[in-house]
Image 1 (tube, rainbow, N blue to C red):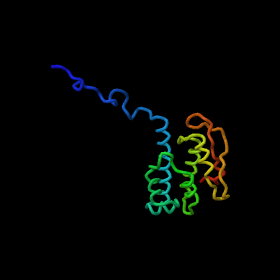
Image 2: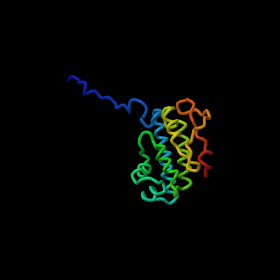
Image 3: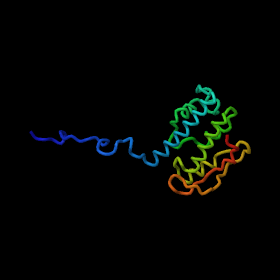
Length: 165
């Protein structure tokens, strides 16, 4: 009996090398996972403050139901939360302090390049953030913090947003 190519046993790619769960994720995948995790932390902060329904969460964030749903599921588009969405959330009068803290952490990490993005994209993001207390555009301060890819990153000092809880 002749052996055909289709008759030969070939282990799957997962069986050939390390198991898939033990392989390190590519850098971009790790950055996106970190970003999703931070957005999930925001959703959890809303729940811990007593905003359990989607309607309550949307109202607390000052967003539409569909945008609140996307944040709740941490499935935001590839670029993450935009500066306009962040501005709307920070301006919401019912925003709980812990949720504000999570948003500000997200802003700092995104501006520092921990979620990816080119230097110019991060600058544009930071330039579109509005500090409601002073109604001025936030200009990032340069603190020479190394970003995810090793380049010098822009960091927004927390003092520009007010104090952290």
